[in-house]
Length: 365
Image 1 (cartoon, rainbow, N blue to C red):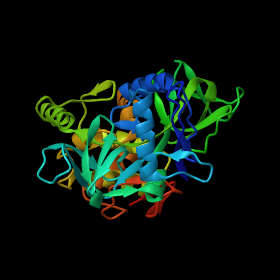
Image 2 (cartoon, rainbow, N blue to C red; image 1 turned 180 degrees about the vertical axis):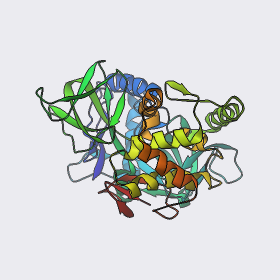
Image 3 (cartoon, rainbow, N blue to C red; image 1 turned 60 degrees about the horizontal axis):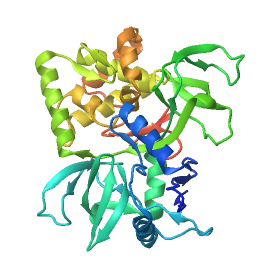
Image 4 (cartoon, helix red, strand yellow; image 1 turned 30 degrees about the horizontal axis):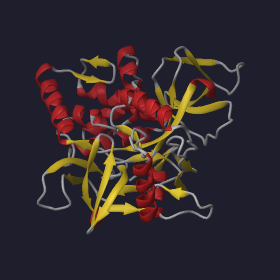
């Protein structure tokens, strides 16, 4: 797969993510879409940040610097300076290219960003709201970065018009499974190309279909956090422990940890076998027991960009309906008791783009 960038002096045309997502739009339009998307999906951001203000000379310099880093493909199109983290848990992001420089944020395993500059074994990158320097020792570039992004990223469909029907089959004759609100974001399950009339999404653990005319399809990867974002999140977690609630998406859920984990398992693996449900719970518990992640279950689940049902608001809806299957409660209880079907794995995705332990439709690593 390749990631490409094209430009026009008449405007900032960006984003060709070949094989990951076909995105090519004028800068003003893409920036507006990115702002709107980001406001609804905290922590999940496009690999390429469209909100970049440059005059013509700055743009030429930027494109030349990206070209110097990433080269061009056989068609002569400039490939974007994608960078991915190469760490097991956490990578410090610093203000200046030095180990002695102030730490201004953190990136985590499988996070991506856009290269802004490189010098002396350090890379200046932008990842979400975080812009800073990282040591090249803990980063992956070029084709390796593209392949990693393809394996850990997620394609989402964001609803742009409320009242969108989810159907059991593609077509207006398909049975209606549910209704989506404007701003809802669901994972795209099958490959989507411009011109397709229907998009296949993960709806409550099963395949559903929505009209492509009423969604925006974009490829996203996890991004880093600034120290302020981390401080705000940790403060919210402290308040949650004190007040016994945490705002998860658009719904403030006054629920116990068992219910919260059961709801997440339902969102991520509601249609999966018993071992697959336990595996999702085990991933959460493995993170909880790792010093690099928040020290509460609520903090792990609510952490920036880590679980798409949180960012999309789906988890909040499940909690508000309070109709979580007993099988998900059972899996949550077993995971909280220490049972695991995936060892110490702390990540999972749909099967097909990553090596690991395969259970049902997911691969764990």
